[in-house]
Length: 469
Image 1 (cartoon, rainbow, N blue to C red):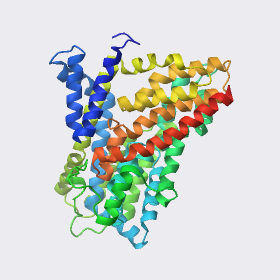
Image 2: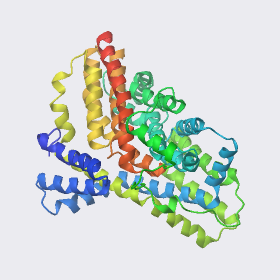
Image 3: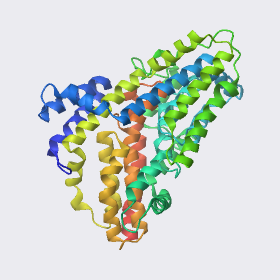
Image 4: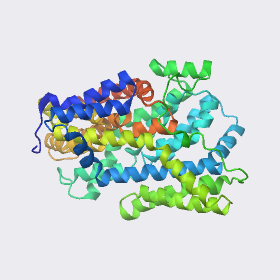
């Protein structure tokens, strides 16, 4: 299919089927598989189209990267469990006698601290805070929401992340932006206009302290956890293997919180941020590989047998397999939607509305729709930015005005919306994994909160569109 081509409204079919089935059956793997199978048939690829699309979409560097990243993160978390590090961290926090409110605030702050990776953040926050959260009778859905809302929404606001480099890179050559430095300057100036991400992060704190009371499905989940002690609903299927929830600490090991927990985390943070500064690319996967190796050596020094270390590493890999399977199918349906021209169709039916006054609002809505339908934020950035940003520069006379900054942030915020709450999104999947929550329960409870942030952001973009022009 040629660039810009689309199969029309039929291109929406795979994503629509996947989302509807996921909510109806509560089985994401089944829903994605059916949606892909029907999609390849509708696209005229025949019965062999299903295995073919799997091979082409999964046999890529991008999927290999996230596959290895998840495996190494799984190993590190399993090592945390086996050394007693997470249990020790939980004990320290318990000794502080944190209230239910403060447990949520701790998870919120922790998520913002690990801002450099939207993949690591939800897994780290969920796995380290899960035990403490359960004891405080906080629903797994609420923990998943906190972990999810402090991952991508925070990453897109920080100018020293891969998100910033990618988005700013798309701006080079547009309007007066001639190089990467100028593009990064535009991105940095646009951050205050990323209303969706800012509001999404702030809302977590407001819900945590009770300034805004829980509502909708989340209120029901929290009431169940608080009154019945059920952090999961009856019949829920946590999106994580038992290997990462029931791994006991090694008998006789003397846990050192610094060496077994803090030091490996510092390794990840140092390598990720250090390589970003020096190489302009955060080597997150390499950071976790290093942390896993170092932590394995520390465990051996502490007296854990080599065979036990290897068995624990394999358990960590098995524990993240449920998430990896869904990620693989999500990558596949995203590739299929791209081939069918889903994003091109959405843009084609809305581009006539892109007037100067409505540009920020419509840009935000288009980006949000595409990202929710496809589950990819970066893919949305790559599709929408080359259309919206030149329009904004054209309306502004090739000057970096408020209209331009708002439009750039509208693309970024809209992309994060889908990454934040689509059942097809990788970070949404990882938030369910880290919190050991039922994936669809997480999505259903989080969507109303995401819609509040999106609604407020949309109103502000509408106001800015009329004030700035």
